[in-house]
Length: 400
Ligand code: MCU
Image (cartoon, rainbow, N blue to C red; front, side, top):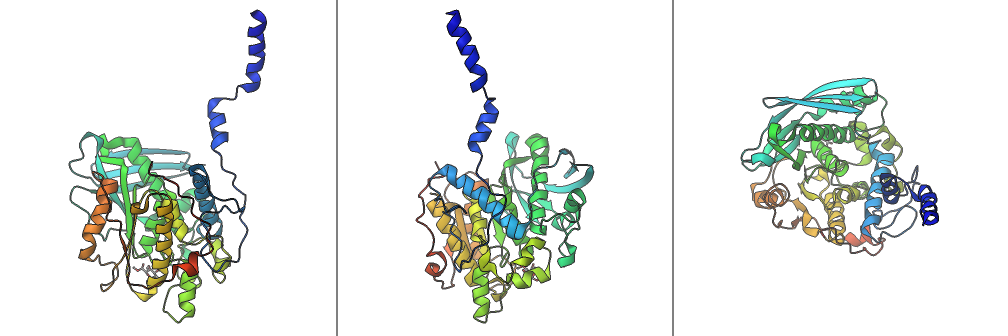
């Protein structure tokens, strides 16, 4: 008996990895340090890892999402940093104050809250407005005002490096403004989590994000990079948001007055300086903006567009239909909607779209239920041209 016990004791140190360590190792995805450029006319295949391996399981998909995020950071977004070293939140009335520390840098930021009503002890839902809100927000849903320009400026290409994100990380940090905004919104959510619904009236598990135009590009990036967002509603984000770079380049070559990658980096600081090397050869990037939808999946996503040429109605339709294909293959098709309704001015929400919008708000921020599974666009597109090279979709069921 004694012999058996000591044999067990001997065996234990060999096997005994701390449980947390073991789980961490098991769940680690094989990420490369950098991802090679490609030469692909069509939209890159979401179902194949960069090393050629097929995405076959839910675990594979989680790793592929991590990889797609890393690839986008390498080619156009710049690095999306981990959470800060410390964050302390306090609240007075409707103003939340955040004290944030990264290394030896610190920053104090205030955020205006418009608290939801009727949320009870668990708090109610709220929508974060990136630089304002231009969708109709249902009664009772709170609003959070994210002053994105103060986080990372968007005046012109030279504004890269200005704002409290860069005060914390240094002026030469690689993040584009939209990437920085995603990180800054993450800090607002940290504050809401820390204070809890008792103090804020907000349930941090029922948060939406929206923004229009340039700020719609930002809202999309927030949803793609910050996984605590339950519903992402980019409005008229166009190029740099719901449009795919390759498709916009193709439309431009057909004579359309459309924003392209080449133009965008000369206009503003929305993307990383890293992107500058690829804007004249977007077909070499192992990513495009259908990956933004792939990164939001399976969470709620309702993409609103317009038929204004500059926004690229064909490009946003192709790109977001590709996004819907991804959602469908993940078994969560109705979680993503695409609504391109024209005939109104930029950032003017068409009232006929309200019922569809509300179906997503109810499903993800409210009582639940089904969305209207929207796919509306008058643009005629040929999806085959853009997705024919994709591997067979794996038919995963992420809703289970
Ligand atoms: C659609 O968003 C932008 C667009 O990308 C820019 O080229 C243009 O200058 O401004 C749009 C915008 O933000 O309008 C409010």
